Length: 92
Image 1: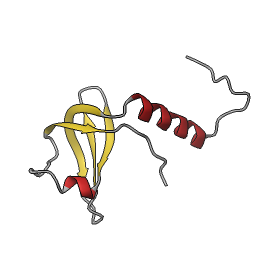
Image 2: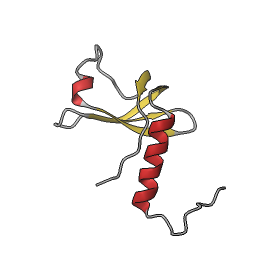
Image 3: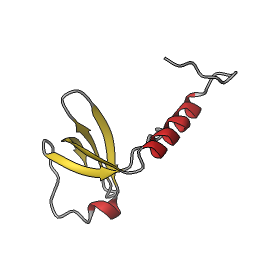
């Protein structure tokens, strides 16, 4: 475990921003494979989902301008291979 070299404690928001910067610079574009779950298609046109394997899961989003390009209808339980960007966002 590494202790921050900063003299002052980090705010939660600052930690989130630092983590976002690390993720986006370390993984600019990645391929992921897993099971699609918790798929939600709200009226905004964006899709929200989880992608999981036997030991972990991440939350994801596919925005309206991209999901319109798919030639299949994703369903919960499907094994998918996807390409995307890793990031983290603040909940508002």
